[in-house]
Length: 248
Image (cartoon, rainbow, N blue to C red; front, side, top):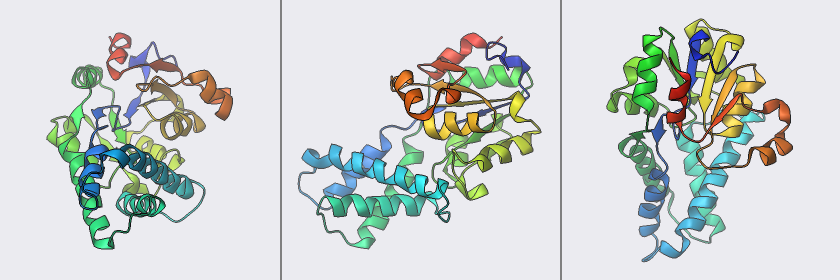
């Protein structure tokens, strides 16, 4: 379907983190608090540690996408943390790692804020009578809490995290579960997300129309050269608020 005609879709699905909400700072703050329990001054290694943590977490998701058994985001983060610390030769008790993971999960809720334009976009879509849903790879149960805390949970008829379907984007199960709940099909469903592999490749793989929120300024040509032009998003915007110009 044509992205310029958003009111023709039967359902619109959104990613949560860095799409509907700003959540970039919570992993850094949680990592800082963890490292402060280990080192007097972690500032010199903070950036390296966060990079390793994110890479390890992404590898955890890739393993499940490739067929490994489902693991909840809490335990994926815990294991990614343990591996990051080990690779930096930092010996830490498991108790501290578990406590640090709990802090990360809680800060995800506490530090989430609505992205610019979110409330107006959701309001306009609701006024069009189009049902909406959220699909996220984040901590089980956090999306419902965050959306309720930010006053927008009532806009969504379905909220899907990994615990609901024991799978993560870009696997088809989260998308299929949401569409079944909303009564839509791939050919009349729009997905909006910021992570290219999880959101765009995941959505395009099963035939959804996709808007890529490229808020990191990544080069699309390089990405398509790696993954294939058939995964090209139907629309690229630099922020969620740009979607407003396609809504009546």
